[in-house]
Image 1: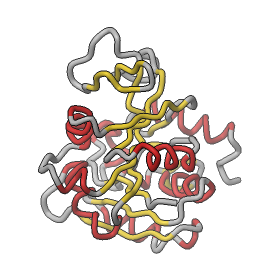
Image 2: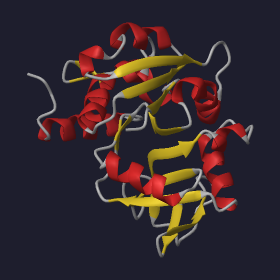
Image 3: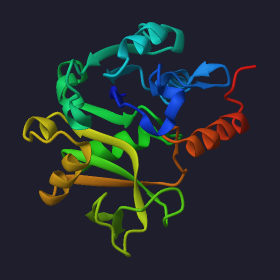
Image 4: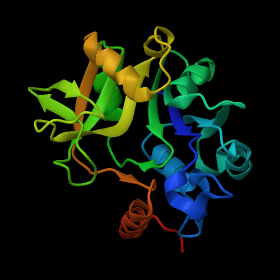
Length: 233
């Protein structure tokens, strides 16, 4: 399967003291860092190569994860450097390791979906990018996607409208060209540009997303992993 870029360079300010001295990827859940649960999920989903795009305290993530062999995947690292590159900038910097086509997801997300089916849809679409979406109806976060007849009609994370019942699920698939041809620093802007140029496909996912970007999200994530039997005893 295609390699995965995990965007793990954020500052995680919403978690307060939990991430004052450790990056969000290393927040403990069930006695293990969150990234361990994330990598294990990707491995069981068929993904073999992961590029961790890191910035703030990234060396701590590399020390904890190493080459990924403990989780059954090959892990490499792409560092922002002294200046944060933004989500799109981090992916652009990692392109030499990612290759021509790849997945991308956020470092605080746990997405239990069918990665192989999503990859297949992307390849068949012939588009430069694919966004996974979820029928959210404002329940888990503010909905930001208008989706109808199998196509994204509108997407905006800042200016939301009543027809937006779906949300960007947090998993994308891209061709490298999507990042080479734009200088934008935010992944949301890449999606917007692809949508405007007719180069954005979409797949609806039916399992809700989980994230650790906030204390409430961390609590829900822990409960979900416990129900799945994913917490090691």
